[in-house]
Length: 88
Image (cartoon, rainbow, N blue to C red; front, side, top):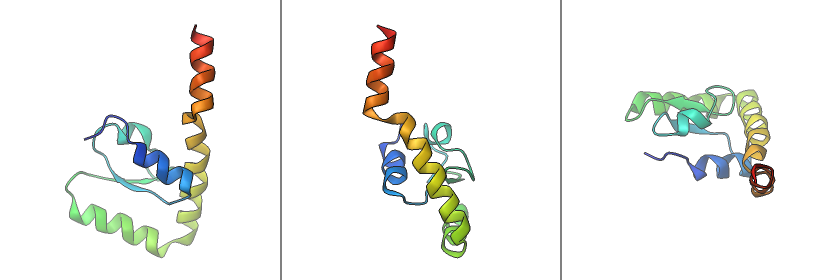
């Protein structure tokens, strides 16, 4: 389990609709059905259902991609530098 998944940010930045396990910090990072679809760890049916939803629903994919690309901007290096500078 990862406390913070760089893979989530990479998917968002690449414009890939996201399906991810609720493991580690992912459930804190991903807003279910807004920035991605979450499923329970080790839940084969949940994984299947999430992937089937993504495969069948173009509108869902587009909505998740748009929300993910908006969300990833909160984690940019420039923003982190700005927040660090403000802190000090």
